[in-house]
Structure formats: structure tokens, C-alpha cells
Length: 325
Length: 263
Image 1 (cartoon, each protein chain N blue to C red):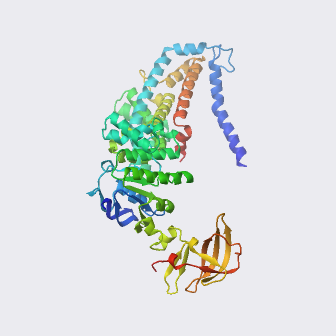
Image 2 (cartoon, each protein chain N blue to C red):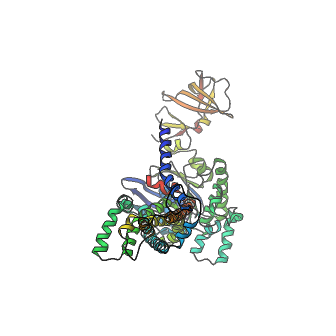
Image 3 (spheres, rainbow over the protein chains, first blue to last red):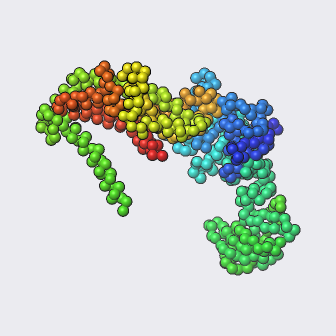
């Protein structure tokens, strides 16, 4: 597999602050790669360096095999969708989408054709003559996407493209983006802080923290095997306990079972929260090392659970993940 | 406890601003021949007289010409300065902005005297050129503030988007930044023109026999005769100002224009 973009020892410092700290990254061609992490982890800075909006303090960026570290953005031929969409307010939807083609001196008849083709792809051909202000957030987002795709970019860069949409639309757009990626076969780099979004959409996910890459792989590889406590917490592993030999362990709330009596860990129910389809039970559990830890169990039913009652918690081995000490 | 005081101050403010205007406007419609309130009857005769009085018309043309030229110069200097302040990597941005806003603070008589001394006496410049320099300086704060306000509202990612799509920095400026700023520049221009036309202190100090602005001519007139023609002329200026203010409000909005000044 060839890398559509490659970062080698890339560092970005702003004054004394190191936003991105010597990262190495190979973005697979024709796939959707997400840069995932909390705000301030360096994911957007990384994307902006790939796009050419800021030059790395040190390191090399290769795009399609060519060293592009100091190439200005207008010479990179990349499509970028900004978090704010950044649609040109004084142009119609069609002119926005055609802007990059006009700069490439595509003759007007062909331009019109390609603009309409791209708008068709995002389902907005009927709004070609509107001004961006007259569109809903979701429609503006699609225009921004069409504008970026129309130039047939080497890479499609998406900076938190879904974070300004409401929850339902966001979920719809995830599938929509996947479809467009599959149809265009573009290499996509998507920046997000939403782990569900990353899990659902990525071919490859790159998790960043404090300017470094902490784990990467396919969602199927990463999700069941978080590399450290940070990744585990970020992916929703809420329970942390210690094995008899002192190894830190983690397990997801939905993988804990509660039984009244059995072979497991002694626990006391602290609180029971009813959440409709399930119950979220807080427990004080004596872990294998002998320490008492507060754990959360997500269970289907538990009519008999009341705060203060003693129960047994079972943490199945195949769901327990060991973390580095 | 704060509200009644605020409300009272607001009422006093409006009274102080509006009452004199009511007197002038009412007097302008008088049928009598003295500048007196209440007016004696209603007629448009003094508007007719004002529009037919040659010194006023000549001065109005001078005023407009000066305003248009000064505004154009102020925008030519002010818009690039604003861009440098807001988007550039300029050291001492605050200082530069302060410098360009300072004509709002320095008393105009001081500016006028300085220009008189240095340009008219010192460099032997004519009235018109000196006035043009003075008015341009006076308009700069408007150019910088109003365009600055609309620039602050514009998404900085717009230029980046243009660059990413293949536009050189210059191309991005002319195809995206400038068109986005157009309403702001337009309002800045309107406000500058109004300020220039209404200016008295500078125009008074720097007037000459061959170039005199409308307010100065009106002042001269009042000193010699006491008829309502001057009230009629004032009313016409007022009406024009209101029209321009409404256009400025519609295109950018005063909250955005003046919101910046209080920062």
C-alpha cells in the first residue's frame, strides 16, 4: 500500500508550546484516516501542516511521494473542508464549487458540467444558484465538501466537518461521507474529537495526545486493545483496576456482570441509575490486588439491586485489557 | 436602582440632541422672514431661496468634492492599514491602530492650526490641498474602524479556503477578501463623507477666498443676515445625512460600526 501522505519527524512549536511533537505518520492511499484526540492534542495543527497553512518547525511532509514541506497551499492541490465551512458569502453555490476550477482555467462549459456533477454527488444540484447564507448548516457543509472535491484533490482534508451539525444530522452525514469517499476513492484525512465518529468512519484511526501519536490502527484493532490509560479513557473504558501481580487493567461498563453470589469480586452497590433500556450501577469493588475501587457496570436488569447490598461482580477475562504500568 | 438613572440620562441625551434640531427644522418652514421660533406660518420659500443662493450651491459643490476626495484617500490608506493590523504579523499593532484612531481624540483646532502652520505657511500649500490633507486625516479613524469591524466579522478561513483551492495570496485578496469587505468599506466611505461635509473647525481654520466649504459659508451668512434661509439649508443637510445614515445602517449596522470603538 502506498502512502498518499507521509510525515517524518514533524514538529510544530508555537513559542515555547510544542503543539506537535516529532510525529511519524503514513496516510494510506484511498482510505479514510481519522486523527482523533481531545482539543489541544495537535490533530488540527497536523492537518494544517499537511494542507500547507503552517510550516512545521522541523520534519518533512511528503504528499504523493514528493517533499512538500515548504510548498504553499495553492500549489498542493488538496481539498480542505473547514470547521466553519468558509464558503464565500458573495458567490452562489455553483460559483463556490467552481472557484477552484476557474483558477485552473477549466473552460466554462466543462466547468459548469463538473460543478453540477459534484453538486449531484452531494445531493445539492437543485440549489446551485443560491447564496450560501440561504442554506441550512447541513447543506452548507455539503457545499464545502463539493467545493473541495471539485478540484479532484490528491487528498481530502476534513477539519471537524460534522461538529457544527445537530446530533441527528451528524449521524446521517457520517454515512454520507463514507459513501462519497467510496464513490470518489479519495484519500481522506478527517480530524475529530468524537470517538464514535472515528470508530464508525475510519479505515485507519490515529489517536493523538499532547502532540504525540499514542496509538494507531483500524478501529477493530484499536477499540478492543487500547494501548494505555489515556486511550482507554478516551474510548469509554471507565473502569480501572489492578491485577494480583500489580498490572493495571481496564474493562468497559457493559462487560461487567453482576450476580448475587458466585465466583468473582466482592462488591457493594453504591448507586443504581435507571436509563431506560439499561441500568448504570456504581459499585465499590475489591479488586484482585485487594484495593477497593469504584466501578461502573452497565446491566440490562437488576430489580434486586439496591444501594448498600452486597453482590459479586464478574469481569470476564476476554474483556479485561491489561495496560502498561 | 441603576435603571431609572440610566433611563433619565438617556432621555436627557435625546432631549439635548433632538430639541435644537426641532427648532431648526421648524424655523426652516416658516413663512416669515426672521429666524424665530415659533415659525410664522408654513411655506417652502426659504428652501427655494437656499437652493437658489449661489454661494451656498458653490460651497456645497466644494464640500462634496472635498468629501469625495478625502474619503477616497482615507480608504486607500486606511483599508490596507486595517488589513495589516488585523491579518498581518505587524509588530506593535495596538500602537499603529492607536495612531490611526488618534484624529478622533486630538482637538481639531489643534490639527487645523498645525496644518495651517506647517503646510500653508511652511510649505506654501493652497487651501484646498491643506484641507484635503486635514480631512483625510480626520476620516482615517472611520476607514480603519469600520472596515476593521467587518474584517473582524469575516471568517479568516475564507482566505485559507481560497488559497487551498489554488489562489495566490494576491488572487485570494481580490476575489475573496475584498468582496467580503465591500459593505464595510462602503459604510466607512459614507460615514467619512458625512463627517467631512459636516466638519467646521478644520474647514474654518483652513478656508480661503477661493475655497470655502458649506458649513463655513453658512456661518459667514449667519453673521451678516438673520433670515431662515440658513435653517432651510441646515434642514436639507440634515435630511441628506439621515438618508446616508439609513443606508449605512442597512448595509453594515451601527452596532457593528460603533461596537468596535468601545472595545
